[in-house]
Image (cartoon, rainbow, N blue to C red; front, side, top):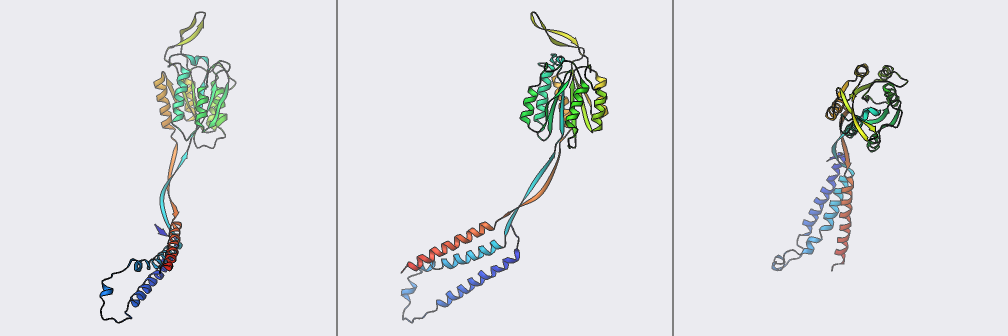
Length: 327
């Protein structure tokens, strides 16, 4: 505890002088005024409780004065508090939703695995704004940049195939993601582009989309998903769903060029575990910036002393009134 106006504490000399004056008067008043032959009657009787109680009004009045002086000196306490400033990252998931993402070389399939692992990634980064862009033969925004984790996760769960024309328009998907992020004022902006195929549709060339991303300072991490060789793919037949092995075709040179040209990195995921490791590695590379500032928080204590002084004055008035009523 410290005082904002410590020089006012010199006023405590006043109650000290009052106490000294009170004691001097009391000692003076005890001088005998009556001569008697014997003192047995006075010395054997001792002090009555009333003699002690009659000093309480002065004690309370003096205590109130002391508390008032301390109060006007403004006692304060200081607590050291840490303020954490977090600088988040803007991240857009650009996800391939072509029908080939239903291949079952992942558990239960590529798209479901990509969604589940992306949701885990989202839950681990509470300070970042994130959004979702999906693409197949064309692209659209599933969720704009937001910090609303519940909405983002629910919209990620709703991502599915067959909602737009089939195909793989990597350039369109990347361009849509860049358009959603180009006006962001975040210090770090990232696109995580996930696909399992070769660019075969769309009006925008993937190389051109990558150049636009580079112009805006947006890093693109590309992920090619699919087992090596062939992968089981569900095909509808008159007898139900039949799994047929189809060749896995991923344009890895294109994905590497996109990543390298924007300052990102290309990854290849061949199963759920590898995809999860890739997201963890991206999370380590794109760490949220945090700064900690320490500063004191002050709390005024004068109210406590003022209330205590008021209580002393009320008790002094009450006891004085009772003493006046006594015979």
